[in-house]
Image (tube, rainbow, N blue to C red; front, side):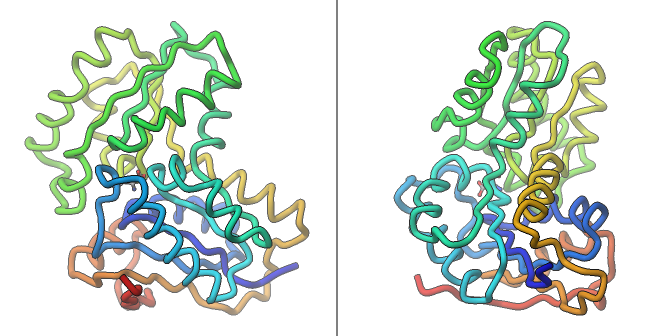
Length: 271
Ligand code: DGL
């Protein structure tokens, strides 16, 4: 048994979309979350910059004595997982891409045509394509970058015509021309617009990596005999490098709770 918290991190608030599933399935676990809201988005930055930022965040979370690191960000997972594991060999580090790729490879699809929507960096890395093809060479995998979704979501422009138009702009041809039947939300912000996508493309099967990753968290903790006990009286703490009103509003919305129930802290990393 290990009651220490799990360290979750993301370039901003998107990684929060994994947390409700964690609390639902592993209610004894506690988290320390870090969202790099001051420097988001990462998805169009140079890989060397993303690596530097990811190292700083991991360093901070490890200093807080977390028992495991979860990279709740596709862009960081696609580019930094090996470097992080090399730098912190004593702590389990989980990326978000492999659990989702396993789910895709094992699920039935109608035409075997898988679509990935993600940031530019994740798309350019080819990480999803490679991992899914390794697991199931029969699948055809197509990806496309949809970079405007993140700033719209961060601004709370969601149940809205502007978001729907943006979805049509990026995805109509992509889905139609490639006959996509299964879509991976390859950016942790995108579960926030899942309902818009389902409404516009009701026949698509949708895979949410923010959901799939929690199963893997459970497996790792169970194998290491590190699941938290019922007596866990530690708190969940949410750090942001820019503790804006926007972050506070979105966290309440995603976790479906009041601000008074949350411990929100500002943390400026050494840039
Ligand atoms: N949350 C990031 C991801 O999953 C995307 C946001 C960003 O561009 O920083 O890729």
